[in-house]
Image (tube, rainbow, N blue to C red):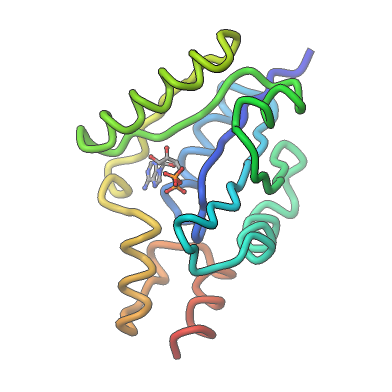
Amino acid sequence: MKRSIIYPGTFDPITNGHIDLIERSLKLFDQVLIAIAESNKKSPLFNLEDRIKMVEKVFTNDKRVSVQGFSKLLVDFAKENNIFTVLRGLRAISDFEHEFQLAGMYKNLSPKIETIFLMPSQEYTYLSASMVREIASLKGDVAQFVPKPVAEELTKIYQ
Ligand code: ADP
């Protein structure tokens, strides 16, 4: 049986830090389902459809990676897909409290769910989608932080 993991997040937009984590998880799992939360409450810069498209472009040739949007409880979405392992990233101690709370809540809502944390390569520990959005909005160069299709979309918005 194939081992699958679900990687939920807002991915507004996907960054090289997210990609680093996905590549790491593929050393441990056969398939990764990137689950993009609609997250309307966060007023994302990119709508769900565009966030999905950008991730699809990055992983077009990799059959081990799939992408879906969702707008319900993650544990319900995970169950529907028959995946019970969740991937989250830890960059710094500052991530820990929020991630600890989330993982605890998933466990409460669905005891079968296990959350696995991976750390990115050191060069990505300071990288976040919000920082990328801010740099792009100030017309800074984000080419080293995001894959090409994302840099292109950001340029379209802020050029
Ligand atoms: P969310 O709104 O769920 O936090 P994000 O897209 O910001 O959505 O993040 C999804 C997950 O990816 C989180 O667990 C976050 O800690 C992790 N993550 C984000 N950026 C990085 C990075 N540079 N390195 C490692 N993990 C990251």
